[in-house]
Image 1 (tube, helix red, strand yellow):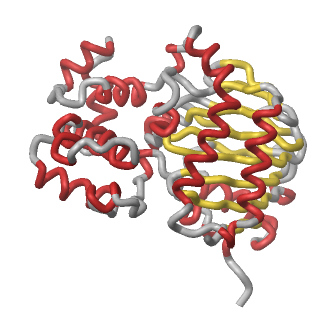
Image 2 (cartoon, helix red, strand yellow; image 1 turned 90 degrees about the horizontal axis):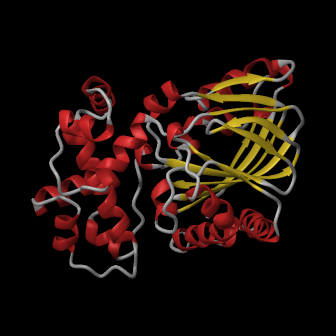
Length: 332
């Protein structure tokens, strides 16, 4: 399996930060120090819908607010295990202090503002939110997990995969991605159980609240006014978010199809296809098949048989190989 290598040294110093900012287009990215001194090196391996990364990056300031969250709509979680360096700021309106051996878990539906004043070396795992929802029942995954042997073990396994990517087959990638998910889930469990007993519901974005409401009533044909009333929001705020997805009907259909994708990706779930579609709110089986293939580039039967699908950005996919293309240039 091919790993992607990114290196800012492939660009002239004056272009490095702007190229990185362009790739991370939904962040406000400011350097701490001289922009010309900015550098980053990444190795990324895509294991199905799970991505593992080793990153070394110079001091930097990241910001992501609710306006950017609503604009991009990515339903993804990132786990940053810190090998070296430290970061401080706010994550999900809570104080963030992350040092070597700890992990910052960032639910991209929530705000982030942090500064790293030293060179940072990180192991990063990004995955669709639904893959953690299969294990946990929490409102937000954003937290800082203290140093533990479980975290260290998960990071060691990821480093091994990155160093031996050529031995991984395309067919085996998704299973290894879920194994990585499970390793980190064990490490995150104590902190997420604590969060579940003390949720920070004020930090939820409007987008996440809408998604969560749709997911709990997939068979209901929701209307804007009804959904706004359920969430104690204005109809205009719900309509504004829904319009970015092509309207509320399209947004509901996307969530229905994503729920079916999740069901059909689970080898334990042997529910007949027509019943899966119906339970996820898709009464027209022909339309379900057609829309499923259009969104995920695979038919429902192919996905169930183990053919990898391709999640779109809004569903939690990480399209780093496209957005950071400038860092992949090679001489000649």
